[in-house]
Image (cartoon, rainbow, N blue to C red; front, side, top):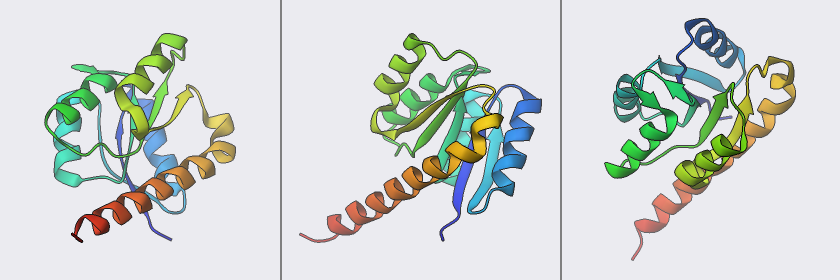
Length: 144
């Protein structure tokens, strides 16, 4: 099974470290970068090319939505995204869908540890499916 590489952007250091530990302990997952701010996160995403992102909405220097808009404006591919937030309200969900579009895999409210083991296999399956579809599209572009 393919290992999914993640970059985690979360402004709370304790929660970020817990999330990194949990992901690294999950079979088939590996955290390759982490940050608490938009600009450093953007640089890591461009440099490391993760398979997926886990983003808190509120970050230092902006929001997850600012980050995704920056990627789109600069013509960068936006990998599958899981958004985590303490503020799951209609407005946040609506903006997540508007900005992230088909890259959005799931919007999860904090704390989500109690449902992690039950929910994460489905999240992982969606990410793997989207990665596979992306590879097929890239191969098809090679043929006239």
